[in-house]
Structure formats: C-alpha cells, structure tokens
Image (cartoon, rainbow, N blue to C red; front, top):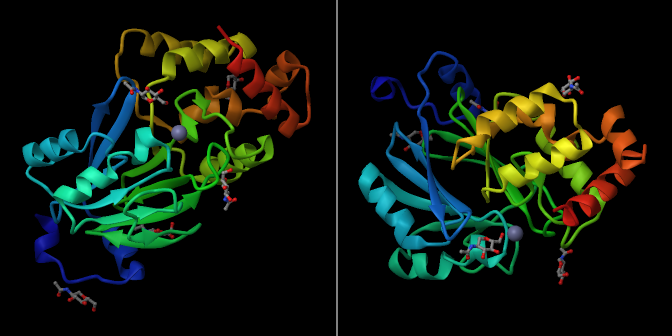
Length: 274
Ligand SMILES: *[C@@H]1O[C@H](CO)[C@@H](O)[C@H](O)[C@H]1NC(C)=O
Ligand SMILES: *[C@@H]1O[C@H](CO)[C@@H](O)[C@H](O)[C@H]1NC(C)=O
Ligand SMILES: *[C@@H]1O[C@H](CO)[C@@H](O)[C@H](O)[C@H]1NC(C)=O
Ligand SMILES: CC(=O)N[C@H]1CO[C@H](CO)[C@@H](O)[C@@H]1O
Ligand SMILES: CC(=O)N[C@H]1CO[C@H](CO)[C@@H](O)[C@@H]1O
Ligand SMILES: [Zn+2]
C-alpha cells in the first residue's frame, strides 16, 4: 500500500534508502512436496509477483499461487537433481512465459543462467545468487531481501542442522560454501532448505557436540514439529556442526583439528550414522 504512493526507485542506491523505512513486503509460502522435499513460493506483496523455488510438483505450486492470488513470474532452481529441477519441464509446458533461473546446463528450461554474485530484482525484491558448490558443482543459493526481511534458499547445500552430501565437490568446497559464503549473510537471514531432514541432523549433531545447550534447545523445539524450516543463519552457527568445524569440542569428538579434515570426517560420520 505504502509503496503505491512513493516515487519510482529503480536503482539499488535509492532502493536501499527507501527500504530503511518501508514495511516488509516479502512473504514466503512453504510447499511440502514428495515425501520430505520442500518447494517455496516467494511473494512480493507490493507487486503480487511470485517466484517458485524448486517446483518439483508444479500443480502444488500453481495451486498455492492461485490460493494466494499472486502472479507467478519466475522459477529459481537450486540444482539439477530431479527432486528439485524435475518439475521445470511440466511447469513450463503450462506456463511457457516463466523466467527460469539456474546455474547448471543439466537443468531443463533455464532462461537465465546465473553466476556467483549476480544480482537482480524481481518486483521489489532484491536477489543475489551465491554459488555454493559441493553437493553439485552447479548449486546456487538465492539470497532474497525486501530490505528488511531476509531469506536464503539453500537447496541441498545447507540444511537445518546439517548439509548435503558431497556428490560433486570436496570437503574444502563445502567448507567454503558454508563458512565463507552462507555464514557471512546477516544472522537474521531465514534459511529455507530443500528437505525436512532436521531431526536426524540434530541427532547426529548431538553425537559430536553433546553439551551444546543451543543444540539441546533446538532439539526440544523441533521434537513436536512436522515442519522445522526455516531456521536462521545465526541459529545454524550455534548448532550446525558443519558450520562449526573450528569448534574445539567438535574437533575433539571427530579426532581432527584442521577445519577441512573436520569437515571430511563429519560427513563420513554422518553418512554412517544410525
Ligand atoms: C521506473 O524507472 C525505470 C527506469 O528509469 C523505468 O524503466 C520504468 O518504466 C519506471 N516505472 C514506472 C512505473 O514508472
Ligand atoms: C560437474 O560435474 C559433472 C559430473 O561429474 C561434470 O560432467 C561437469 O563437467 C562438472 N562441471 C563443472 C563446471 O565442473
Ligand atoms: C541488494 O543486494 C545487494 C547485494 O547483496 C546489497 O548490497 C544491497 O544492500 C541490497 N539492497 C537491499 C535493499 O537489501
Ligand atoms: C517421495 C519422494 O520422492 N521423496 C524424495 C525426496 O527427496 C529425496 C532426495 O533427497 C528422495 O530420495 C525422495 O525419494
Ligand atoms: C556447551 C557448548 O558447547 N555450548 C556451545 C554451543 O554453541 C554456541 C555457539 O557457538 C557456543 O557459544 C556454546 O559455547
Ligand atoms: Zn540434491
């Protein structure tokens, strides 16, 4: 509402000033898909435009857009795996006008190939693409803000309390993606990940960080919840072992001190964790 009476700020410079006093315009709708996979709708409430993130089951996303009475204009694909990108063909067959963002030529229907630190606006939302490779070598996290609220869509790179498997990258790549890229986002950035793996992630985290009170509190909070997403970057830094590879307790419990070796060991232990 407020926005309608304000002048046209088209440059980021003005945009930043404008938003320091504006009310937040971003709304995020979580859409559980398949068994444990998440798609999302990011809505810009000032223009009613919406972005679908990893719309693996297109009809669920289109229904959600109809219910919310928003106009879907774009698709963000986090990586090429079928349970994220597998809905693009079908969605585009119904809505060929959509702009599809992604960073991997194995993703169907991409119209806008993105690179690290690409920035653009969708409606009034400010989007920054962050290459966060390792799970796949074309994995992107999309950082989206209306100047007040902040969210990052991490696909299978960062999960609540964990991270994705290293299919196309090294422990060094994951360490870089988590600690040199995602950890540097503002602490109040909400983390929207690709799967609901929180409970098993936190159980593993407790095995290597048994006395961490933040972790125990998070486990208690998540116990009774079916949907635990989003968390925040600030929270993850408190209890996600893969973001805490320099923590002495975790180093002691995995028997390594070099952060890259801690990362490798954590992943190996998690893969074998029951
Ligand atoms: C806002 O400004 C941009 C760039 O100057 C221009 O292309 C666009 O048409 C303007 N939009 C409106 C609604 O005036
Ligand atoms: C990404 O990994 C795939 C599969 O291993 C490989 O074919 C491709 O060349 C890699 N791409 C880059 C940019 O490294
Ligand atoms: C838009 O994104 C850029 C890049 O992250 C950032 O420098 C700028 O402050 C952002 N503007 C707002 C209003 O969030
Ligand atoms: C029901 C279903 O297909 N769920 C999928 C969710 O994503 C994981 C991959 O992370 C698949 O293994 C599941 O099959
Ligand atoms: C007891 C313990 O190890 N608590 C730690 C949990 O994690 C936070 C965030 O790093 C630390 O500040 C606590 O010391
Ligand atoms: Zn994946």
